[in-house]
Image (cartoon, helix red, strand yellow):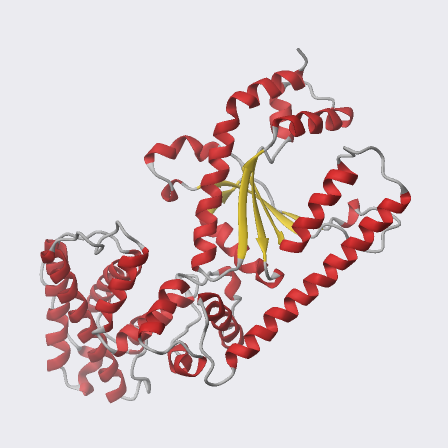
Length: 431
């Protein structure tokens, strides 16, 4: 048995492993992209055995494989995921999600490759980006840990380009129907031109949709339109590329806006003022949610219910004990009071003109002693874990955090605005 047949025999036994690895990557990526408002079709597969054998035979004429391991090293897409984008302009947001969700084991490949372009062709050919990734341990359960070593290729292109590449790959590259005539190559080139023109139309369609949504009085029809609006606003006001950060859970934000009857560009305007440049720390959707919650503490319960519906099984979901729910609501109420006091304090001494500035920004303006700043920052992380990450906290932990917040609130209530820079050097209650 030659090396290729040995490789095929081994891969046949491992087929389910590669298929499962591709499924895990696909599910992880698809969930994130849909939640972030990226319109796409995500599919996965382990490489077909007969097609893989044919590919190995073709490549062996050039590679001259010397072992089974050399074939494994050469064929990088045994497990593959395909992201077909409705709008090619969202490529950067997809890349941001891939970088955040997976570990890279090789450099990405960008097509078209100028050095490999086919002569006598009027159009550029296949346009896509390929990423070679592995699963991150924190995103999978204990039962799937064996797939951490699996290498998966993610191919990202427009829906039109993926369709054209399938035709071109099977007819021209694989030559499964024999050598193509010059006329057939010309027709494939013409189809490539139509696809490129179609991608231009997709970009124009996306821009037209953005313009429609931006009109006064228009409602966001879905969280995809909300995501586009967030990106456009952020790109106009922030100094850094939003694509490097991620949008966050736009679907949960959309549900909250709909409940509050604020799902329009006009209603959202004042909340978008809260967007800041540290987008790598706080995704855009979470920043807007924070601004909405800071305005009215009763909205915490509404947002908690929204999260329950979309994330069944996490803390706060149906089945959580009443005492835990009560402790969580008391904690969130105490935090809302703290946000209100900090904003009033900053306004009273002329450090802020906004009624609901982010706490992180306020702490930079208010010159509190280091021990108090550290205490508030610690509580802010707990609050973000409760609201956005939905981590489990015991009743005792929540009660302790509430006690610490109330201690700070009492200090701020007693402090004259003129003494803001020397609030206190007292130590917080022991945990």
